[in-house]
Length: 146
Image (cartoon, rainbow, N blue to C red; front, side):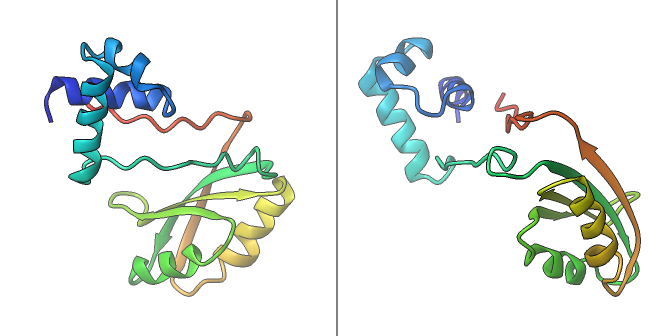
């Protein structure tokens, strides 16, 4: 990837539906050159264009990141939680927690129930710390592409 590829990715992070006629000039290319560059990135699987839903707009009213400490294999806990519809993603980590899990529930009480009735009883779960998100529509997925 060169600087033009990274510029294309930065523009797509801001507006994933930008027209090639608008994208090209923003990155110093013609519309057709921008389309060819993006197609090359897609074909090489460096980039995927996907739709991302906003869980809060879809009815969820309580969102949190759960830090989970596990005795034993955290992959087992991650696999169990990944099957739940409340779970957006689960990632293995190192450090103070073995696993981070992002969850969305209909309301704060449902979040509390999920932590106490679903997460804590899983064999091996030693500790759960909840980091709730405040505010609606605060999700932006931006990665530094250089």
